[in-house]
Length: 114
Length: 111
Image (cartoon, rainbow over all chains, first blue to last red; front, side, top):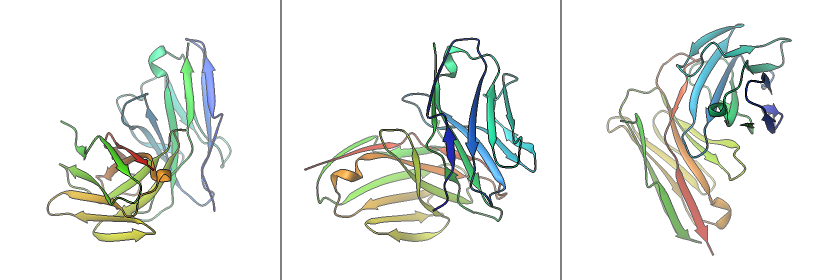
């Protein structure tokens, strides 16, 4: 069964460093999302992406964040200068075209900023 | 106030019990998802529904659009059902509409 793949599963980085979280969405999906979950809190929307541009972004998704689909298969989330409060589980999701189609989630990347 | 509220927050059941988890939302939605999150953190989609009822194995999900309420039922619960169950709603009608999540219900099923 096709699945969304995220790498790495766990990343530890020093405060101020740049990180790139990678996602390979399901191949015929056209809509892509990043969500995050701070430990003990609910999942929060970060950004949605379609047709090579951002469709919607939340207040969390400030200038330190960027997304890219560099090669038609990967979908990346970059955090330019990480802060302690960026420590969270980051989930990628993808969805195929059509109204009310289901979103499929990756297993997540646990980012720890020290 | 959260747009998506779940109850209970925590639930302990004995193996074999019938379990109900509730989700109420305060906004108009186009679809509601039930998701499962295991201790490792990964999220698995269980159901997406916009009306009526869906069944998959021992899991049943219902939604009442007029009352803005959904329930997830687990029949003949088993310790492997232990996980966090999350309700999430899609507010917009466009495909790219984001999901808004509830805080989850932590279920533990004991022998």
